[in-house]
Amino acid sequence: MRRRLIVAICAGVLVLSIGSECCMAAVTNAYSKWKNGPSRTEDFFPIAVWLQSPSKAGNYKQAGFNTYVGLWKGPTEQQLAELRRYGMKVICHQNEAGLRHVDDPIIIGWMHGDEPDNAQSLGKGKGYGPPIPPRKIIEDYVKIRRADVSRPVILNLGQAVAWDGWHGRGVRTGHPEDYPEYVKGCDIASFDIYPAAHSRPQVAGKLWYVAKGVERLVGWTEGKKVVWNCIECTRIKNPDKKATPHQVRCEVWMSIIHGSMGLIYFVHEWQPRFNESALLSDTAMLSAVTRINGQIAELAPVLNSATIKNAATVSVGNEAVPVAMMVKSYGGSTYLFAVGMRDGGTNATFTVRGLKGERVVEVLGEGREIISRDGVFKDSFDAWDVHLYRIGQKGPVESRG
Image 1 (cartoon, rainbow, N blue to C red):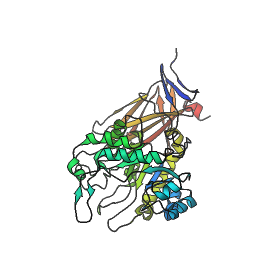
Image 2: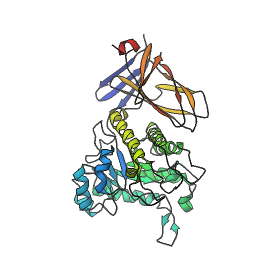
Image 3: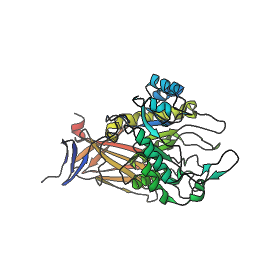
Image 4: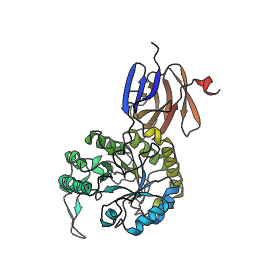
C-alpha cells in the first residue's frame, strides 16, 4: 500500500494518517467547558496585556490584543464600561463589582493575586514573609468556583517556574515540588520570566527559560489544564537592556511550540522612568508586536487544532543550537513551526513522515519557498530565528497551476 497523508473529520474527531500510522485527537476547543469563558471559536487565540488602564483598550485592540488580564483596584463599574466600549474582554479579580456582572460576557475569567509563589510583602519597610502556601491557593480556587463555575480561574506564577535558583521565593527557594500543588488551584496556569531584560547572569539573555517554564507547567498539570505565559517587550527595570523585536517573536513562538495556549504581554517599564504602557510609546516594538499578533490571529485555527506528535524529526548541523518544532494539520495542509533555541546559528534538516514526492514548503511571512523531497527539506537558522512552514498537497509544478 502506498504511504499517503490523509486528513478527515469523523464524529467530531480529527483523524490524521501519516504513512501507515494513524493519530486521533479530539478537536474540542480548550475553553469549551466554560459557558462564559474565552471564546470557543477556532479563530480565537488569547493575546492579552497585563494590568493596563481600560482607557487604552482601543490602542491595544489596534495592535491585535483581545484580552486584558488584571485591573488596578478593580474591576469597577467604570473600568468594565470602558472595556465594553472597545469590545475588550477581561480576566479580573472576583470582587463585588465583578460578581454583579456575573452574566456580563465582557468578563471571561477570574484570577488569583499575582505570583503567590514568591515571598510576600509584610508591608512597607517590614520586609518579606514566606510565599502563600499552595493549600491557600486551592482553598481560594474552590471559593471562586463556588461563586461562578461558568468561567475559568487563572493563576500566574513567578519566575521560579523556570528557574529554581530564583531567590525571590524566600524560604521556599529551591523547592520546585511546590508547583504541582499550586496548579491544582486553577484552570489556566501561567507564569512570567523575562530573560532578555534579566539582571542575573544565570538567566540574562537565555531566552529558552521561557520555553522551559511552559514545558514545566504542561508537565505539572499533566497536560490536563490550559497553560499561558507572559512575554517581555520593554526594559522593565533594566536601563541598559531590553528584548529586541526579533527576540520577542522568538519568545512568543518558543512558548507556543512548547505548549502555551495564550500569551500575556508585560508592557510596564520602570527605567529610565516609570511608564505603565511603555509598549505604546515604543514605535518600533509596537509595530513588531502588532505583526506578531496579526500572524498569530491568522493562524489561530491551526494553533487550536491538535498537535501531531512524532510526525516529524529535525537534525541540526550545530548541536549547540537545538531547534524545537511542532506539527499541525489543518485545511489539507501540514504546518511545521520551528524555533532556534540558543543564541547561535545552525542548519536544520526536517523530515516529515509520510510525505512522498516533491512538495512546496511555503515559509510563512518571509516571501520564500523551499522544496521538500519525500518529506525532507532544509533551512538555516540565525540566532533566535523562527520559521513557520506550510506544506500543501501539491507538488512544485502543480502548485503553480
